[in-house]
Amino acid sequence: MLIDALLAALPADRVVRDPDVVAKYQHDEAEWAPYAAPVAVVRPRTALEVQAVVRACLDHDTAVVTRGAGTGLSGGANATDGCVVLALEGMNAIKEIDPLERYAVVEPGVVNDDLRAACAEHGLWYPPDPASSPWSTIGGNVATNAGGLCCVKYGVTRDYVLGMQIVTGTGDLVRLGRKTAKGVAGYDLAGLMVGSEGTLGVITEITVKLRPLQDPQRTVAGYFDSIVDAGRAVSAVAAAGLTPSALELVDKQCLIAVDAWKKMGLSVEANVVLLGRIDTAGVVGDQEAEKMLSCFDEAGATWSAVSTDQEEADALFAARRLAYPAMERLGPVLTEDVCVPKRAVPEMLARIEQIGIAHATTIANIAHAGDGNLHPLLITPRDDEAARARAQAAFADIIDAALELGGTVTGEHGVGLLKMDGLAQELDPVVLGMHRAVKNALDPRGIMNPGKIFE
Image 1 (cartoon, rainbow, N blue to C red):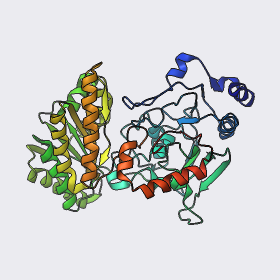
Image 2: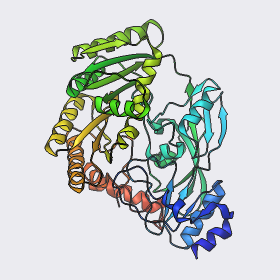
Image 3: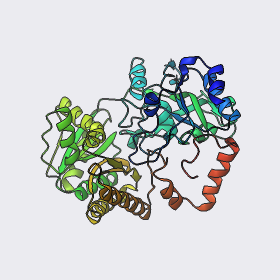
Image 4: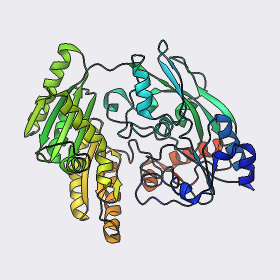
């Protein structure tokens, strides 16, 4: 029996079968993504314990679903019937920070903001910063190739992963990648694991590269009556040759929800707010901030300014991070994650607005606008099946619109369960076959997070 094998291989406290506890590990934050009951949750503390779990599951032909903090928004960590959920939040050690070589070695359960704080003590910075950075873990960030607020200038998780240790679908414990600044020996198997959503193996350790601490930032805020005008400002910033360290969009619905929840004293009289940041040093940075301001004004901003109040600026960015959980308190929220070319942002925002009207669905908007990664939030009343069906139809139309404009179905949340149909639309059948060939080669028994992405 599988449970007996797990208990024989692991300390008894690692295997959890209490139904109330197990229920908390059944799904991530994706609204309406299906999930089922696992046979057990295992909370390992070491890579060897992870290996023991995978080998036991191989022996008993049982699926392994790996999860971190459960903050995902695509259903990628949702349990399948009779699987073992491998919960890695207890593997949370920062093993090494090397200031000379500028890398850190961490376990997958390390929280993103905790790594950033530890690096800052050495004058270093780990740039990827998803809005969930106070809660999400590095392992989950790697599994979905998470982005974040500053990725418009500094890139996404894949750009910072040097190497990793994994347990493969055949139960082997191996190292991939490197710690050196350069290295091209063999295929980039570590890169292949980034964004694989637990379907190719279990990541037990990650080596990430670091940068020097970020220079002080100037915040530029603009208020807009129309979401399309805000989109035009985003395109104008790109056309002006600016590369902001952040360019975020958040609408009034989200700010009101955050203020009602956190009582932050936000008093924004605008339908849409754009928040830009420039971290270029010296006079050049001042000039870039003024140039961004001009872009906002020329696109139709009703008010704009370079902030002189750092506390106020930080509060607005904090509100942006809190927008999703604040909206979630109001009712079920189906979250989109499409990404389009920057020139297409105004058109995509206009189509989202039209889709909401066509399906009688309330859509709030937040976005990593600077790189075209849009997160429409489709909001429905609780226990309203008709509203749910309309929201799901709107969700599909938004995907269609993004693809039509040359975009992608997911910029950073991953495919999981919610975007499987969209992925099939986006990728050529031959390319899908290449994906399946990789999956079959690295997970020949098909136990690693089955049924996700393209199956």
